[in-house]
Each structure stands twice: as structure tokens, then as C-alpha cells.
Image (cartoon, rainbow, N blue to C red; front, side):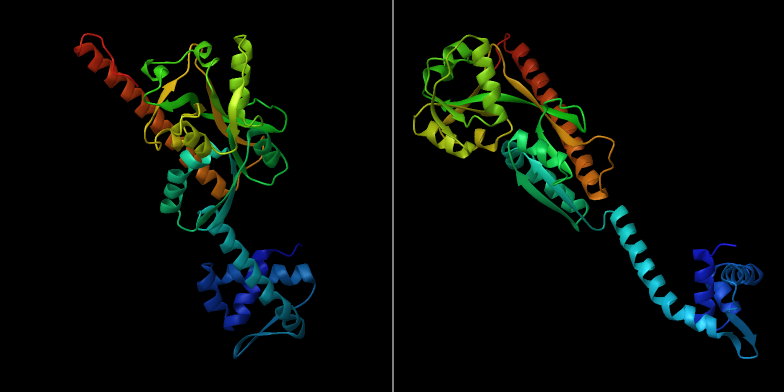
Amino acid sequence: MTVTLRGLRAFATVLRYGSFTRAAALLNVTQPALTVQIRQLENGLGLRLLDRTPRGAEPTAAGRELARSLEPMLQELDHTILSLKDLAARHRGVVRLAALPSVASGLLPDTIARLQSTYPHLQVRLREAVTGQVYEMVRSEQVDLGLATDLSPGGALAVERLFQDRILALLPAAHPLARLRAIPLARLAGEKLLLLESDSSIRRLVDDAFAAGGHMLRPAFEAVHMGTLAGMARAGLGIALMPSTAPETAMAPGLVTRPLGPPELRRWVGLIRLRDRSLPPAAEALADILRDHCTRAGAQAVANITSKRKRAATTGGIMTRP
């Protein structure tokens, strides 16, 4: 006969209240069923634990010895179970997240605000890094989730694509290329370009596109932060190339953005996680909100394009400049 948690709880409850009747009511079982549980526990231990007396149920010497260690053990177990239920209900928890700087500054602030509005006690620990570092942090379990360019790594890592990001040119409104709806790469080859450093996914995408087109890429300036590139563009030092998700593309007075192309430069950004591994509830909550946010943003983008086309149709087919 094995010793069960149910039997131990039954014994502890009877001992606490000194009555089989009260214990059965509290445990929501019949008194005969409670008696069976106590008997099975005693048989499993090979010891009598409780005596029925006119004053109620009283512990034997063995029962007192068991009670001394059992009560704190059950309290600790109950505390652990409540704590796990809080985790499951997302009443507490920490999300460890690594993300590209452009995504961290553009997409994440609203997403984290929504997470904390829905689950006020969840925390996000964010680390900004380039794509290769994001993958390594997920692989080594330094973080639960990554947000980075889709490199289709395979193996232990899986990528769930969330959205496509365009590479834009950020340049002064008075620049001659600002008159174009989209700027061909060949036209950029002769310009002073302001680029992120070579270990960024944006820079690799630009480098590969220029090489494929047979163009020489000679950056006028390189920087770590996109805010620096925007400041240089505003000072007339060149044309900055940065992702459309970067807030700097909409926060730079006196500058305009133009897509590149042909060819147009795009990258997939996705959620990186360990394959076949469950996420902690807090991380799953953030992932759900990210998916919903990107779905809504994509639907809004389609609606905006449709609206522009309708306006163009009513004005003789002339679309406004992006």
C-alpha cells in the first residue's frame, strides 16, 4: 500500500481540527471515505496514527512525529502550487527578450504597454542586439524569445515570421532624389551613404543587394545607432538607409523617406525560440500580443493601400507620393 498526498492531507486536516466530521466537511468527502483514506495511510506506513477518543481524534506517538514534519511540508507545497497557478494565470512572471534595436524602439514600446495593461504584474527584461547575437542568446537560453531577421537557422531554433520590413532611404526634402517615388539602387551607388555598421542585418542586406547589382558600396559614414544616421542626414552629410520600423524615419524634421527599388529591399522579422520547447506563460503572453499587433498592423497597411488606390482612381489615376 502506497502513501498518497490525499491520505497525508486527510490526516493533517483531522489532526488540525480534532474531528473526522469537520475534516470530512472541509475536504468535501463523506466521513466513511475519509476514514478509508486514513486507514490506507496507516496501512502504508504500518503504524496507527490516530485514536478515536470521547474528546475526538487524537494522534498517537507516531502521529505526533509525522505531524511535526508534515505540516510545514504541506504548507510549502500549497505555497508552491499557488505560485504555479499565478504563473499559469499570468499574475506574475518575467519575459526575457532579445530584439533588434530597430524593433525594440519601433514595435516593442506599444506591445509592452499593452502586455502590462492586460497583465500588470508581468515584467519584460529587454536586451538589444544584432541578429547573430539574438540567435545566440536564444540558443544558449539567456533569453526566452528573440525578435530578429529570419535567417532560417534550422536545428535547435525555430523562427515564426511576424512581418516584413522595408529598407528606406532617409534624405533631405530638397535632395534631387527626393522627387522620385522610389530610388533605384543604381542611383544610390554614386551618393554619399550613411549606413549601420557591418554586423547589422540591415547592413548585410544592403551590401548583398549592391553586390548583386554590380555596384560598389562606399559608405560616407557608419554608425551604431539609427538616430545618429538620421542626424547626419539632416545635416546634409548623405542619405541614410534604415528599416521602415525604425521610429527615426517618422521623427526626423526636414527629412523624407523613399523606398528603394528596383530591386526593393525587404527583410522578414520573426520570433526566434527553441524548437520543441514550451515557453513560460509570461513569454507566451508577449508572443500572443506580438502576433496580434502584427496582424492588425498588416491589415491596416492593406487598408491604407486600398484607400490610396481608390483616391487615385477618382483623380485620374495619379497616386500621391509616399
